[in-house]
Image 1 (cartoon, helix red, strand yellow):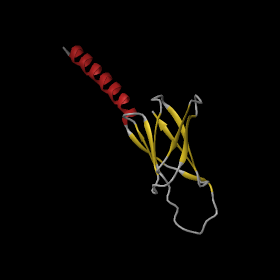
Image 2: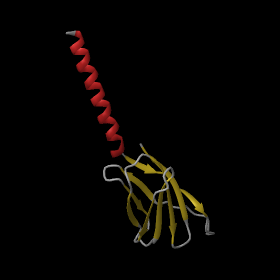
Image 3: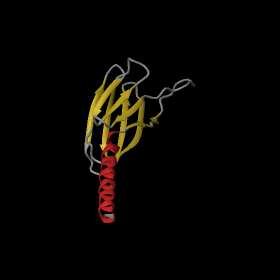
Image 4: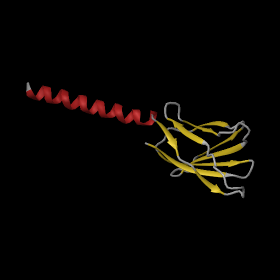
Amino acid sequence: MKRIILAICLTMGIVTSQTIQGDEKNVDKEIVLQEKSKVFRPRSIVLLPVCLYHGFNSSVVIEFPDDDVSFTTTIVNILTGEQWFEIGDNGYCEVFVSRESGTYRLSIDTASGNSYEGNFTIE
């Protein structure tokens, strides 16, 4: 009887851990950006774009605080070299990427000459 209960508990533990590992890709993550190139301008507060990875639909959403920003976005899987490219208009863009685990590099270049970069990981 003890062996049957132990076998059931072990099986349930394995099933639970597999379910949790599958749900890790469905997590939303914020992508932290850094300004890569500096355009000379008066000292002021620089508003960076907001970038989020939505794990449920495997997409990266980029949203600038200003609506009149045009930009290009490139996402590269650092391990495999797979790339995604999208042009954003009106300060918003959504790029669909693969669900493959790894580290990805996000690069944003605006029409005004500003560049931003950040990394994120899909587990």
